[in-house]
View 1 (cartoon, helix red, strand yellow):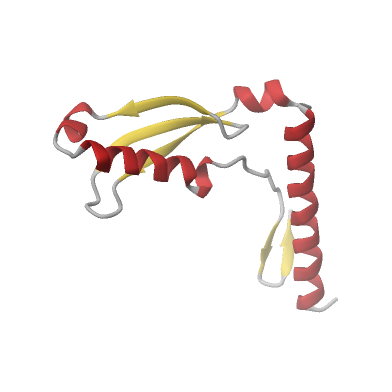
View 2 (cartoon, rainbow, N blue to C red):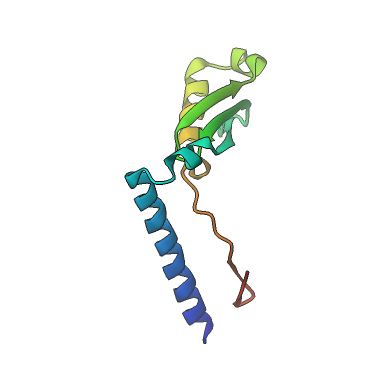
Length: 111
């Protein structure tokens, strides 16, 4: 099997994983389990580098909490803080994640 074939099959598997994730979300299957998962996404102003805190996202991609640093927020313009929160909500880290156990490394699959 060539490297191209390995990459092709890996991408095909990733596409199947994403399709399964979308099907699970739309059907509501595993909704309670995914909704119980939580992860934090940093809220950062990409222009100034100010870190305002984190947002808490569940496994379905829904906002579950907002944990901001009072001092940083008080020292900033409210529109900058809101823009940073919106950017964090739209960041790839805030989207539902496909859990994969295999990675392509050095031309071969590692399980």
